[in-house]
Image (tube, rainbow, N blue to C red; front, side):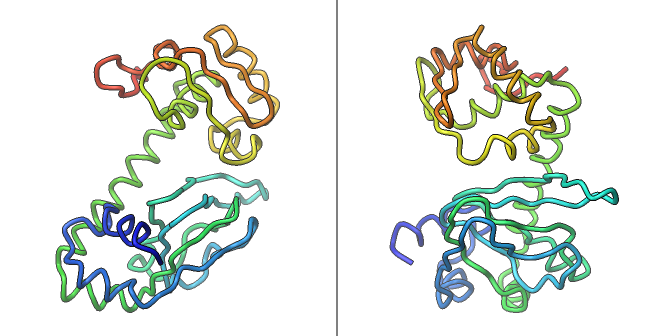
Length: 234
């Protein structure tokens, strides 16, 4: 790992407040591994012997329903970790994990992590904070799916890709539209229809390239508070 990746790891919520020496003991001797698109990191029900930190790329977390359909639980990207709770909760992964674009990940051994938690209590608190963040994300996703129209869900997704807070913006979809649709709780055809409706607020799409005429206008349509930027779903 290079210096920028090491700084990314230290700035992650999971390692916030944890001494550098402890973080180095945990991840310093493990090289990052490259994964191709479609690589399966673990299966639902398999032993939870590690969790992951993303240095670059995107990973999909999902479950398979009894009728064989895939339900996307979450999608994680650079600077985020996932599956931490599984290494303590009965030792089984509750979901599947699949790499959705070529990625570089750090695999952190569960046994080593548990040993270090006993030595560094701050690490346990940081892990709880990280799990709380994941839970907040899931609650927000459920609120959006239940209470927002398809165009507003897509608008909020696009706003998350914007680097600025106002003016025009061009973003590139990070992964396939069909997967974005699943993440937002809609069918691919519904996604396509909803994108067309966003033209009224200055959003056009050509393949993976999305042009936004005015971020502020899109945020207003999405239901974002003009002062805090938080989503108003009620």
